[in-house]
Amino acid sequence: MSFETISVIGLGYIGLPTAAMFAAYGKNVIGVDVNQHAVDTINRGEIHIVEPDLDAIVHKAVSDGKLKAVLTPEAADAFLIAVPTPFLPTENESDIPQPDLKYIQSAAKAIAPVLKKGDLVILESTSPVGATEKMADWLAEYRTDLTFPKTHAEESDIRIAHCPERVLPGHVVRELVENDRVIGGLTNKCSEQATKLYKTFVKGDCVVTNARTAEMAKLTENSCRDVQIAFANELSIICDKLDIDVWELISLANRHPRINILQPGPGVGGHCIAVDPWFIVSKTPEQAILIHTARKVNDSKPQWVVDKVKIAISDFLQGNPDKTAKEVAIACYGLAFKPDIDDLRESPALGISKSIAEFHKGQIYAVEPNINESNTLLDTLNLVGLSTALNNADIHVLLVDHQEFKEVAIESKFIIDTKGIWS
Ligand code: SAJ
View (cartoon, rainbow, N blue to C red):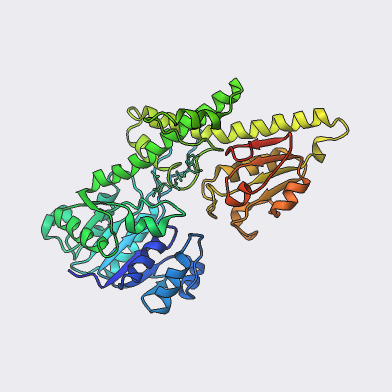
């Protein structure tokens, strides 16, 4: 099977760069998304997300006629599904979140009518163990005229694999090409076909395993990082209590040849590391004790920062008895979930800023150089420029180490620096 036409379902942070890369390497790519704005933007040769170097690649792919975006799937030789895998809402705070596969199911339903014998379907979305088999079951249910690996093994009409995306937002264009890929086919032929497809542009190794191990490998990578960040976050809370500079401490400890502690922050955000460990915890709650605890440590960090802001307000008022709390202005620097991107999903910085805005009656200056005011996730937060915040705020809360903030020289007694760049 040669793959001339490739369809990517879901044109977000992973799907769009992947689609653009296949197009850049000469494939005809049909990108599918339910979001009309995303489709229109891409068809103009522009992008609706912030990712370095992606705009030029998309622009060229669209002008060369190699990439187009549509709302409804069309026939292709391979389908890559890169849709979100959130979790279901929980009733109580202590409930373990359960994965919600509804977007995978709707993607399967959407491509089912155009599937034909010989097609390859790859699930790229980070998924709980068993999701690829589930997706295959849905496809089999929607297309009873075709055969699938579960019943026809190597002879199946449709090949199915899980190949988790592993690229780091902000470095996607380079990592898509250079990173190794884990290829988890439902059969050997599925893996073979998937490897052949990725070899279009992947320079890293394509390492073959089964679908369940591939699912677990991805969850393991992100859980490992979550546990390590939890260690750094716990250290920052311990150091605050003991009056020790955690940044200095970590840099000293990291001089040991076998120690590599990560950096503390306001919490862990994004749609990956703050989410994926739950896919393990929800499947094996009695075994995943450390992974579960790390989630709790990282999830508790934003409230710790909010409590620090409350203490700073009260300290400020003590030193300025002529002022009332309503007259205290607070600046929050950074709303994205990590530096130099526009992504507000599961962002602790955004959550902290909103929590401050909820309890504090005075002025809040929110600074986020990477987004504009039309972003609906902002709610009631008003964006201001960096200098407005620096010149007018009484309390400065640094939440994201964006490049713009690293260049700031600030002098104030009331700085809460969650990233250690103004300390
Ligand atoms: N963070 C810290 N301290 C650190 C490093 C990160 O607090 O030392 C925070 C960040 O500020 C952010 C969160 O952790 O809020 C996650 O950021 P990240 O840069 O660690 O990871 P993501 O979510 O952008 O991307 C991760 C990557 N996984 C790993 O590095 C193991 C990426 O390779 C995956 O493809 C991506 O998840 C994904 O899509 O699953």
